[in-house]
Length: 497
Image (cartoon, rainbow, N blue to C red; front, side, top):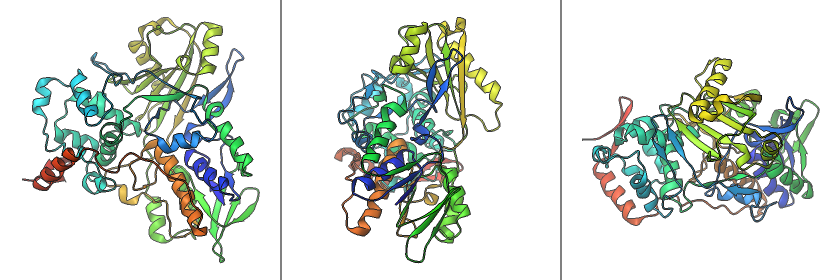
């Protein structure tokens, strides 16, 4: 089997296939594994060798399948460590936290509203509870039939969410997709609400790797694959895939061409679009057209700064921000990562990472990088006198966009060819998963789909429930939903009269 792409989805598919005795070749165009959660070495001006990456990733405790993949080499998940809180701060001074929010649904959602300073009594009175009913019983995939036709922003308008709560709560979800809420399908935002508030008891606290991504996650998994005789070919791009008359596939790189019984396409949006566009024999015309319509989210920027003095001791390892221009979060890496902690101990400085999830297309890079630094100095004033000893900036535009009305164009794992499957966080799985967990889940599903051709049992999957957990809330949503259907109109979600 050929697995094209060694991000989370490709690694998950390759692992399941190799563990079941399938001969696997894993191709990756980059020189490292992990895709958007990968890392690579670099040398700072002071001669220190460091590991760069594309920015902070939170490993939420609802990521059952991703964590199952990591347990292959770390059964106790000891290479992850939990951060004590998920703090949020708005430029107006409002702050929110998920540390003390109850984790049991529906107390989790009610507790957040009760404890959050973003919700004032007057704001609660202004809410339109009937418009919010779809959040009480999110069903997958039915939620896309109901909400994919409106934007996350329009849905929150219809509900009457106060601006402060919108910025500090729901936009956390929408911007996690690297998208402006005006562009994002409300179904995706509702799904995230279900996953973290009403569908699970893990809450919104999360873990992070104790070491850089390669050392903590992917180097051990590469050794696991090698023990199962998988061939890992990094820095090798697959340029063409074509079906053969005997039901197999030919996969060609710039160096050779090999035949495989099956192929997993575990590529990002642009990569999948490009490869399918070149391979006119793959799938059928409608399938290729749908792939061609897939879109990427706006560009994002990650700035990692090595400062000559530490940030204040009470600064958290991670802080979500809103209202500070394009700045979406600040990470202080020495709080949790051993490599950054070592540099900080040697120099007395801090390693700080700034993330802008959705930069306006065409933005001037130098200007945006300077603006992020300016915003850091507003949020953490003690950095105003710090000298930046080194800085690295990562600009990318390859995250999938889940636009309003775009669900039907997203590929499923299965394709018109029985031996060709697709995996990645852009795939619709029919399961309540998102982000990195969608990538891992789709990778497992892709492997399972290929294995079932030979009657081989695949990977068992775990997810939060595919519908609301509370029978009372489900009944309320059903009864009121029947009486007051929602429709999308004039750019906003409204109530049918």
